[in-house]
Image (cartoon, rainbow, N blue to C red; front, side, top):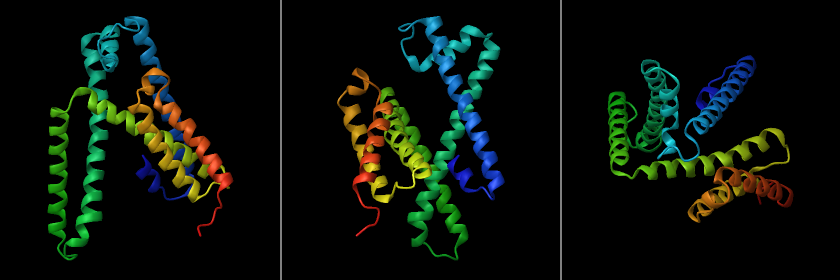
Length: 221
């Protein structure tokens, strides 16, 4: 989505993209919360051995099998689309940023071949990692990403947009602190004992951002 926003041509499209993005985000979050609440109502807090299966279980409980299969397929298609986009993005960054300077500029076909080979290699690595790694590993990594990157960069983006005093030094300190705090909070087990790292990282990053903005000078020496 961020790449689509970067491709916006004028202010009118930016406003339209903002409205569509906000509306879609609200719908998505309401749907996710509703799905969880319905799952609690049907199965109870401990009714599922693995809570990650709440979506297909709820759909199978509420709809006929054929309709539930279509809805589940739609969700899987969205997941595959996201994974596909991330795969292409990773391959593009690797080939364009690291390998392209080493290749001859005039050999376009070779660039294309290298890009395709990198994409295929990354896909194979991802499949092998998903097959060999424990089930909880991928979920744990996603938790680190959502808490560390989401909780930290959301603070940076919000303050950049709405607080003129917020500056680069504060942003850098906020990012480093947010990442480090996420690793500490999840690794220590406090993520499950007290409160999720997604919330705590956002709070801590926000406090650090405000304090570093007020205490540090804007200009670099």
